[in-house]
Length: 138
Ligand SMILES: [Zn+2]
Ligand SMILES: [Zn+2]
Image 1 (cartoon, rainbow, N blue to C red):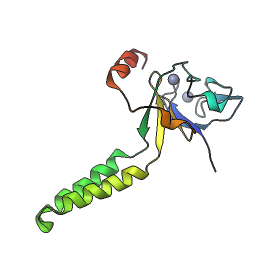
Image 2: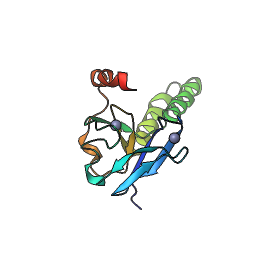
Image 3: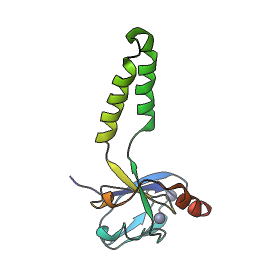
Image 4: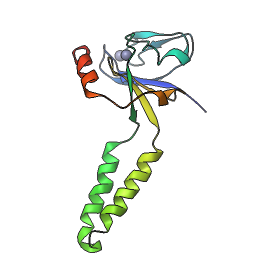
């Protein structure tokens, strides 16, 4: 089933939590019961972050970086046996896995990660100079 979620570190207890996003709901930390914010409509979340009212978001692959690293590592280890052929092959495997990975959208200001929202594709990858602007809020 299609479920939109928000994930972030709680300001209060510093624990990571993931919550389901539903219309007209209040986001409450499952660990310490602190209220994070309110959601009116799920469709407009990516117009304005419900937690910090920031309007800038970026996309990122919802991908475990470690996995890609391990795959390339195995490719490098196999180089002497395969006369270097393992590198392009493993790079290809890495790329194939990477392509299938879904996207998440993250808020520049508070770092909340949104998954499963339908309009995730209109955002661009992280831009460093925009990130710097929001560094002081983190
Ligand atoms: Zn908390
Ligand atoms: Zn935010």
